[in-house]
Length: 153
Image (cartoon, rainbow, N blue to C red):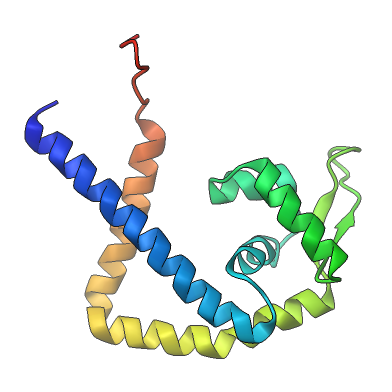
């Protein structure tokens, strides 16, 4: 690996860490008026179109099953989601939003739409679309490339 490649990887990682923090701050602001946190919104959002097991939500989000389980249990306790039987696996129940959970997520919509429009105006439509494409490409590349072990094996 060349020094320029190492620098590019480091700069990319630092930018991604910063973006993660910025997106989490934006998500917290957007979710707060709906009575949600960013993490609750993230988990509810993952199951809006179809119920999923906790492990499936974790895989889709790239986070640990344990952290999703903790949030899912909180959502169920607050009446925002419920566990339903999973025909594919007796023990791994599916999580799905309740009507109250769907209503909470829908209350985020107007603020989300306004913020998206402002961001698109700042970036420009074409650059915004290219950003989405490149982030998806980067994510796919990270999944395709094996991380070397510390011993070099």
